[in-house]
Image (cartoon, rainbow, N blue to C red):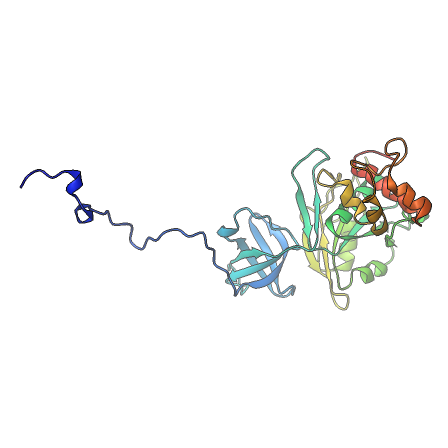
Length: 337
């Protein structure tokens, strides 16, 4: 038989190397996990998420992030879908296969130039800004920045003034009177009943500088919480007494959830725009649409054609509320008013 050329070959002459046993083409389709059980993330620790099944604090499950989620961020307060062993038994581990859409997100950056956003809490309805009236003294800038972050993230802010047995809250109530902002005072020698009622039936995040009495409040609201408390340091900055973000269920009859966050000294707002702040003020938000392009909404020589001034002068807007809004815009921009 003569020599055969390549043009004389057909598929029967080609040897096909067998693939690996059981191998099949990779698919981009992911399982739908229709049976996933909904849960709320209540704590995070080194790649493990503690979750409350169906939002019930008695049904605690520890879970890991499923491979198909990649590096999807999962924060305390997130509502997730769980599969696998959800019995909650010792040594068991479920898998988080889904992160549900968030209703609110509290974010912060390390400073106003840091492009990296950190999710502090997800799905909280309220942000309780805890500030001491003395020891350490209040810091307006911190309060303002927390207000801006709350408005931008879709949380309703609440100002809680602690240590009212050491100083009067009147000045601070007056300072923020133009804002639609609930203000609660508490004393070291009295149970925080007013705050307890405000938190009942809601998911609320607490933020504050170290030493303002936040952990003491949490321990009073949730006696079994056992959050560490400490004295304020001699230089007035306080010690960081809470080191992790944890959601704790309020006992009956209040119910609801309290999310305690670590004490922080700065609240960067690199992720927030002036539009995010104005959007929280219904009347001013609509008026701002009439402003010229690139208006910073600060008025005066800086923004002489800002329509917000017209809104106040002839359309019934509140001059006190505009002053408060512009104060917050200055804080958002890292400037003092």
